[in-house]
Length: 449
Ligand code: ADP
Image (cartoon, rainbow, N blue to C red; front, side, top):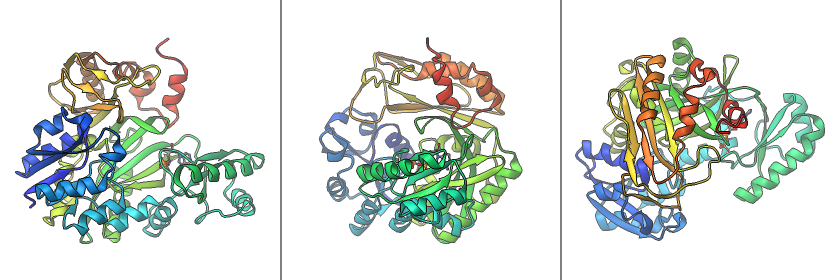
């Protein structure tokens, strides 16, 4: 096992990783920008290194500084968390070239999954169901016309280098096609420096369902069930549930087994998430994330398995602590992402937290790096914490979540907690009846007016 791990991240996820390290008896190194000198992950780490000014490009994304911090402190491994450098194949290569273990899959696997055309091809080869569409890039207008006829309208043009929903355009009819195609290429070129695009059938009312997988790097793999992340705003997840209200255990086992087998065949090492759109009983692969996800705690809640502990074990070569047969799904869990934003307008609201009282009690987990007297810097993502609630079934989970939302006090800044208080009162939410567009439609009804 490692003696010392450097955590190349900040906020709640840095703290999350630090906790797993402490429980394994591993010493921790925090890195931080000058804006984060007072952050909780810095205070709780055994050592800390300042790696640059507030701007992420000069600190949390600064590879030479992070490698230097490893060398200075003698860290044997780096955990990248999510975001920042977590899906940067080059970073994985560089740290390993310096004799430091990257806690995550191989650079090759990160690279394959980071290129959406390549990822989709790989998924298909491994027996994962994909969205009907072009086989590879659509290189000319003539090909686009032919492909769209073949797939059937409406179609979606997507950027191969895409992320965050950018470079995606819908064509509802042949009249929209060339404009959508050319706009997607131009947007992708501008955002990612790459104008390769591909085409897919547009699914109309899908849910977003993702499967948590774990590879041991030696040809073995398991799945830990799914998460339903359909409640999204601008392609950003807001509320996640495990299990999905839309699946039964037979469907769960079936898609889980397909994903575990694919990951095993790939020889994948560590945690991964295979994301699907789900419509009319069918799964359609959209992408694979080769890292820990924000919403991983709901999987931890229903499986009682510490995913970061497992990531560290796999990276250290100790192997997973569980087999597929050990994994049982118990109860229901929901996560609410709490952002420092106005709940009605989503305008960022950084600043000083003057009072802070998180909820507690049975089945309640709050992952957050904030505390009373902490000043949220304006430079980073607005996620300040996650409320994760577990119940024996979905009804108990919802009742507990309502109680927790009533208890939660964050003063001095605005948060998205009031939005969750609205959602918990909604009948569709109570029934688990929502697709990926539900939240946007709900917000159009101006729930705060
Ligand atoms: P990105 O990496 O840019 O986030 P994804 O491929 O993960 O791109 O897709 C982002 C979101 O776009 C999905 O969660 C879904 O809401 C929507 N989407 C993607 N592909 C399709 C499709 N074929 N039909 C309908 N919606 C889609």
